[in-house]
Length: 318
Image (cartoon, rainbow, N blue to C red; front, side, top):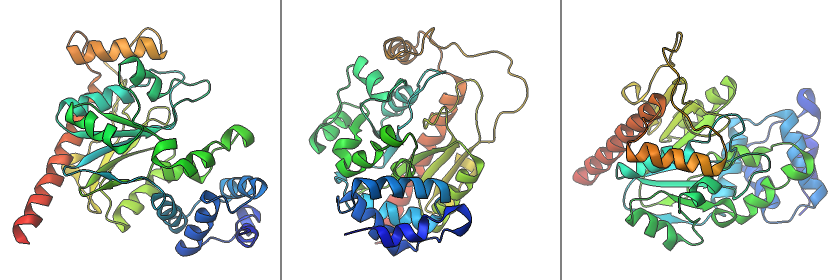
């Protein structure tokens, strides 16, 4: 199947491009993921969407196509989903600390992302230094949860065609809609999933809030740290929690204002090995956790408790 008809609509530049409906967006993404589009068409698709920008209907359609090609991850308990697709350059990547802190609170935590990121310190590398191997099958995820550990599943295992789409970045130098949709994935079946979705630009944050409301999503939205779904260790960002499409102020937090009274103790280097040692020190209690990260953990624990209460209430009324 050629995707040329879709490219004619979306590839006319920011001013002349036409938006796709949900079903058209799903069909387009499905053709790309299934290898029905040529490499040139796939590159044109990424470039066109980058220039035009995605609408909510387009993202919802893309998401439906991606999720239909994901592995299913069963769970009887709510799961916290941490999409980790950026890694870090200037600050330590503390997504592993967030994941392990949540797991120590007794939550099922599923991290997903690439195994490597050029010129960045990726979550997979830090978790490997902490002795946590990536999952290769669903049983590995369940085993990690049984040990009260976070599970990390590579995107190439979670959704192989999505990883192929993400790999186009190395060829054309730009992120595409696949990177956006990766933050929105929910492969969990049988239980609610709390998606932690980070944003860099306020416009994207507003779009994600509308998505959560319109599609009754359970999500924590925040301005991430270098594109990672973890609060900046130096200053608490605004955190908004949505449960079933409703904004929940009691599980949200305002951004920290004013001058910092003191900087948090952070690792001397941002490399994977040094960050892994720092994570171990925080978890052992020999170093304090950054206050913003501790606050994010508390908000997620409270939100997951609300999800469990919601599930118990529905069970009683059934």
